[in-house]
Length: 208
Image (cartoon, rainbow, N blue to C red):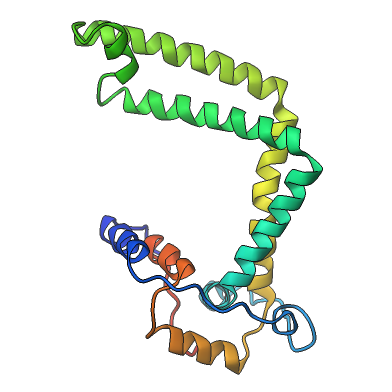
């Protein structure tokens, strides 16, 4: 599996802004109940395993989106304060990291505004370092103080993703699944298809 390229990301962005069509919601019987068949994948054959996962992600994508929203909503309802606190801390840490790396290539907007735009590059860099240091200290303190909330927020995000991956790995594809993948491959792009295209993930074949 190769790394995503700039062209694949731009193609996916163009698809997202163009004709996207959500795949049909599959029945509960087809998804997990009577007609659904499950089997452990061959862990030694990563290509076949990955092909099954990709095809199931495309076929059941609407079910997976709904499953993700339901699980995430339930977790938020059960722990609203902790999850909100964890999201704030994570957003602060990401902002500090982003600002740290972006400051290496261009002057800080905040620093330039505070200095009236007349300071030289050295003064702007010095000003920027103090903001990054302050943000890092605050983010580190909040992370240690609210580490349980941060871990719960990460678990809330990873739980539906893990459930989706497990189902896509275990669910055997039936003929309806294979035919639907074949038809949809010639039809409008879907959100999951655009995402997989952006990640440069491809299934080996249409019917396989």
